[in-house]
Length: 386
Image 1 (spheres, rainbow, N blue to C red):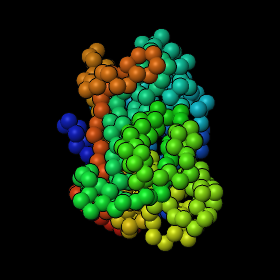
Image 2: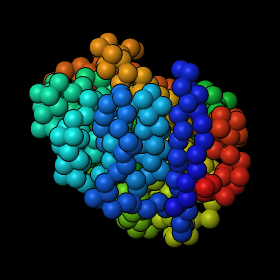
Image 3: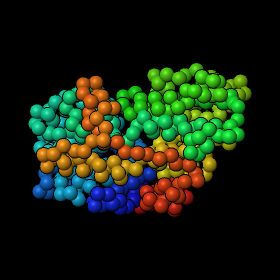
Image 4: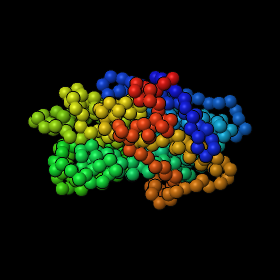
């Protein structure tokens, strides 16, 4: 795994990010850290300890998020205990317990399972420790104080829009194409992990966007699998998505028909899906959507293999979490721009939502390279530079 650092300036504060990416066989792959990874801390600082719990390093975006939050907090004068849980729920619970025992003043948590941390949040509340849910809403607890994320329903809308554009039904701006083909088009849909609250928002936004085209017959989900329970991918595993795509090709497309487009909710799953298609003999890829602008997928988009991804600038997300943490520790309420949408089953959690962008081959330069997120050399190689 290679690493690189770049700077991002937001609200007057420089955040150094370390991004890691791995290139692999087929459509690309990443590797997982050991579940018991102890994370990193800095030497004691005057600001006190903040615990940062990230779910996994299987996706390069979580490495970027963790490093960005850590760098921003350290810049603000705090000691940081950054932990990755290896997508193992008991490990994440234990790591958060340890952060509380160490005397953390605040917790920033990207949960593996949004319903599995009630005990840890109760302990944090009893100790007077504010909790910020990071990108994934923590459910079924009153002890979630703030939520920083992107507009996740709109991310799904953007994914559905990208698929429709790939099929020629919409133009790049999301308007009805003047010369739209009549169809019908065979598509298949994938969703993320059911225990990730965001997966439901992504799926709902995408399916509502596709719904009119499904209802009028322009689009056909040939397998008939359209419920999120049928199409979910546990833990967002690319191998699981690849296996399901292989099964779909065998069960639904063995009659000689072709799949014309695939709704994939993130880049890891997209690469697994693409590998299945490649192994099945597809030389010209149908449009496959994604999310996170992972460098391996950005290269695939540049090469005309994957069709699109959603760029959620994690530098902005990390910066917003640092700002919210500083507000809490100064005895102030963080700024929220949404106080209605994110009901966790017990309370509506005050939230700060950020916007995202659709990346196609022709705007990689403008969105990703010109902004300093990736370099042209990284896009060409599909790997982050050291």
